[in-house]
Amino acid sequence: MPVVKVLELVGTSNKDWSDAANQAVKEAAPKLPNIVGVEVLNWTANVKDGAITEYKADVKIAYLDEPR
Image (cartoon, rainbow, N blue to C red):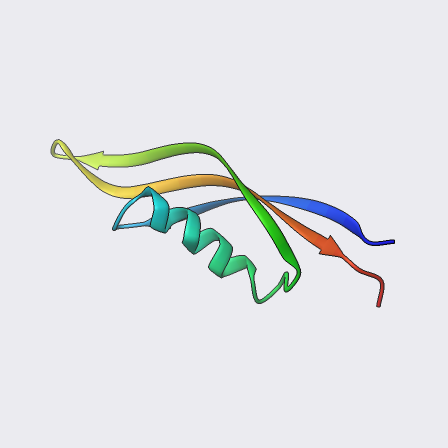
């Protein structure tokens, strides 16, 4: 029976928060080929001179840990 494991990551983007979450999943996908879901925990950003310079998405990625 497969077990679902969860990994917490922070994705970043210069574009927007959605892209930051997508970047986290994209970065994890080659190492975790059995991703089954993602939960966004928090949205944050870096600000400089009154403008957002980097968007951040704190996410939990759920993946199947199947026996080999």
